[in-house]
Image 1 (cartoon, rainbow over the protein chains, first blue to last red):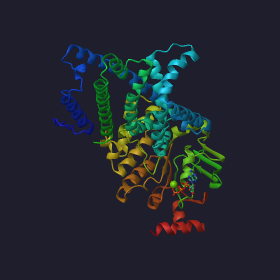
Image 2 (cartoon, protein in one colour; image 1 turned 90 degrees about the vertical axis):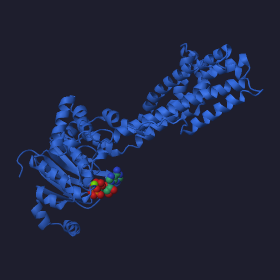
Image 3 (cartoon, helix red, strand yellow; image 1 turned 90 degrees about the horizontal axis):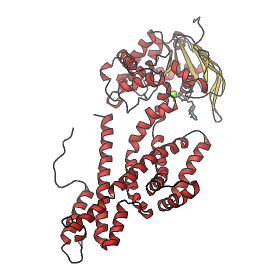
Image 4 (spheres, each protein chain N blue to C red; image 1 turned 45 degrees about the horizontal axis):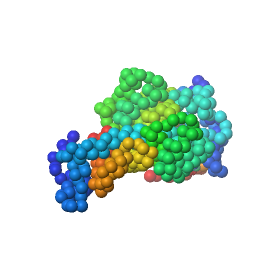
Length: 259
Length: 246
Ligand SMILES: Nc1ncnc2c1ncn2[C@@H]1O[C@H](COP(=O)(O)OP(=O)(O)OP(=O)(O)O)[C@@H](O)[C@H]1O
Ligand SMILES: [Mg+2]
């Protein structure tokens, strides 16, 4: 195993930018036009405000994680018929992808929250409306990613699996998908990051995630510059951590096959 | 020659790719324990012919049976239980260790438990003489070792028939022998084998019958002594001239 060097100055470019930005903001906080007091953890009200903003984090994460888990499954279920020999199955898959991709996420969120309950008679809370809309929208992209990944696996792999008497399902499950998923992991990581960002749109229907919290604080404190800057940093940190996690997973899976 | 019923029987089998006919009226019976070597120019339909036997290719007309089981969609799993196949490109599963490559078929194809599958995998790994590579991944092995793993993977299904499609064509010259030796040993165990190869030395040593194909037809079937010394057809003579003079 590699030992991590204990370096203070990070190699990652985005991390450097972030440290630079934070330092700049901290220093410029002395300037007259800045009102950092609003989120200064040293004061009681600043601390309360920060805590309020950060309390949205858990919803942002829950929302994105649930949505991506669903969209991966739906995406796979849409991709598989798209690869079958049956032309109607392929057309159905194609149509789903085209239609879903054509709808803006914000519109989908509004439609699921305000429209879907009227159609179905169910009551759908903001959380699940957000999850459904994000998952639906993302599933079209996931389907395309899976399709490309599965298509990249050589025909010989299917033939070898079939020739040791595996059926279609076992062939996909034990031979094709494990290889395809390794290949599409970077793309899946991108989708997860995209999902974290798009989850901010769910604030429009009142979901108390990061963006909504920031909006509410701006209304009461009227310090948009400082509050939205903190919001930017929140997303930045979250996404850097997720990207690092995805890279770690990629490395681990690669090590599995080598060394 | 072989008194028992044929284990493989082609009766007037034909196949088209669109309007191109790859197999023309193929008639061939293979007896239990028989070793057949198929040769012929590139594009003559050798691969297509043997891939029909385990249903990797479909055929258009005629009748193809493995042990009286007609090779068709409904019977494919049963047919594939009896027929193993070794490919030119090995086609090992790169994400699985050698041992897991060997155990997948027994577990998922034959419904064995882990322990039993492991025992059988180790046994056949021994048979192809690389038991020490069990925990490695395919890419860590040489081409010759990979092909021997692929042979062992098929043998773990304990098939009745083994098909080989140019098993040494993708190998460096110094690794060809180790693979052919394993195949020759297998032939001595009484396995029914159909081998597509241009290794004429191997064919002479091992084959009961040579099958020569050209333009989708079986042009000549003869014991190796006859085939190599006195081929009947002009096409076989031309072909042998070409490959033996290299
Ligand atoms: N999927 C396909 N679609 C169309 N034509 C094909 C297909 N597969 C094979 N063919 C054609 O069928 C003919 C026979 O192919 P096949 O692979 O059986 O020949 P082969 O004797 O194994 O040749 P080689 O020695 O090069 O492996 C070739 O002309 C090939 O181009
Ligand atoms: Mg071929």
